Image (cartoon, rainbow, N blue to C red; front, side):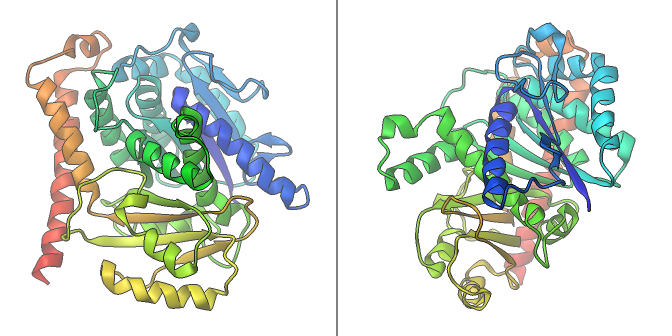
Length: 399
């Protein structure tokens, strides 16, 4: 048995993580009270709740939470969050090590955080750097990262800096990164709640966004927590979704409704169900797709037949899926590795360039030991990632 340790970092990470633990606790209670030992040590979650301010950290499990910087916060500054992580390294790494030693055979870690603020981006990046250095690539690191919305002005003016610096660290340290953004999450919560006749003013709340994001993580881990003959380890899921080392950014699609198998399978590849906003195009190449279908009252043969119908439309063959019938929700999820992520990175990079060319707010980062060379390196690495995704599309079009 291979355990999984969850690290939820920052306000967003802890709010989503708290909902995640509530959700999977309900699932295991429905399954004759069984607590999955891969995610639980007895009745204690195998998770660490990390923040630089105490407002949203779940203190029910006193040996699981860590408050750094005396609870003052990281000031929405990646460099400050990274510096706080470095200054707290002895304490936080000792706490993580105690949880690792409580495992018989740790397979990997799941990071839950956002990229716009200071703690989730900076402190989370410090942990990914440190833990990757400690464990090498012997452990599977998967990140669930919430990006800021690009459709409207943000309260955090330096979010392009924080996001590019975070994406650079994720690209270097993670085996797989699942991307969501606030705009697409908002759109999906409104759609889902209108179906359930919930008023729009109650549908568009952070609680609703966290509910969808936590449902994605619960769906992702369901095949590990309730093992079948395939996709029962983080390694097996990663190998299916990330067949190439450079292409490790995954976007989930999400549906919460009662539909036919064919309708669900068709909708899971449509842009309107994606939880990260991107520009539409016919040039995109799809590297891999995995569908998690909940409460489907059909045999696997029926699902396979429906999947074959959509494969020619996405230029991809051999569509893996996992049927999960223990979840009380009627949600289904797809995980898609496609070159459309380049438009997400391009838009963030463009916003980064607009403020970086004017040297705006750079002093805030230099005060926390983050130099211009570090900014330039991160920006260059993301540019290389974008170009590699574009190259994959050119290969497809030439064929």
